Image (tube, rainbow, N blue to C red; front, side, top):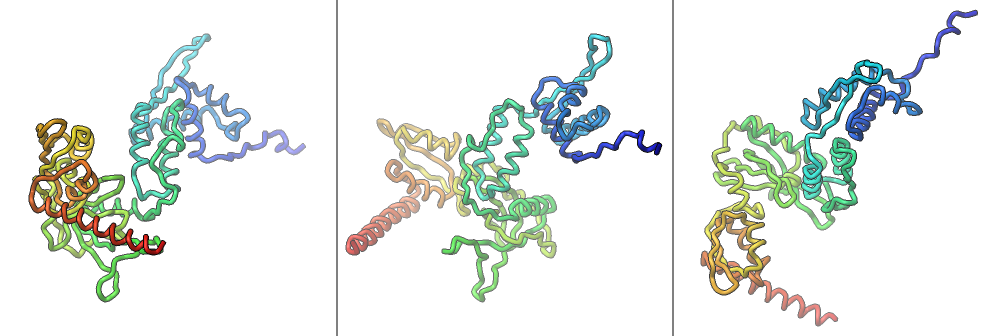
Length: 357
């Protein structure tokens, strides 16, 4: 008889290490305390049935190191004796975030625009795989996503390049896209028809109104600008431009964001306006609690704020039925001119539509 006939057939490994990691992590997440023998028993009738207890322990050790390295979770180990007085090691999974913190993370991510459904699902699923098993997280319960979102495929690559440039105090060179009537984005052009190139020193990246913005200083300019990162195209570090530290231009980021509610660039002014009491919530939501509020007359208040001039103009127009801007005079004039122009435009266009019908 051939001696090889007495040997057990070799069990082929039909799974990857990453797949086994995911399988074990899923079991750990769903139980308060798990032993290696419990995991081994779970593998019966699965494609992981040929994994050894030693391999399970090794993969748990790897997951433990991954959790400590990333800070996503911890896997603690405890020893206890069974009925035969043998030592048994148990593993306990604990997420770094509470359920309410995971909910906040999901909902915050749902408000970021410019991320495609495919990439959004990938990130959501990754986060979901780190949550406690009894945490109810479904895309059906998360609001704010649009299925028709057009994503700049290089958005996260550009964010990485910009972050590196901020660290290195180098400038970045890029093109900037605008939408055309065909609903597609194209780079802005110079007068000669060539793509317009921009050079700027990045200072900070922020998320405002659901969009990624770059706060920067354009080359040969002293003022701060705000640029939509999802509209930036072909971003590279401009190594041929001298390095420059521009961080002093933005000493107080929270104050800057409070003053630039729509992320418009330009002058910050002192403005005053009158509001009814019902708009107090909106004032605090938009401008924060640094505003000065004092009674004006029955049921109304006068508000003083430091704010970007263009942003105040648009905010006042948004609430024009309830808000009366009283200072500065230049802004008051700009608002009244816009309202008059809007009235004339509406009248002219609607008159033409009426004649057509």
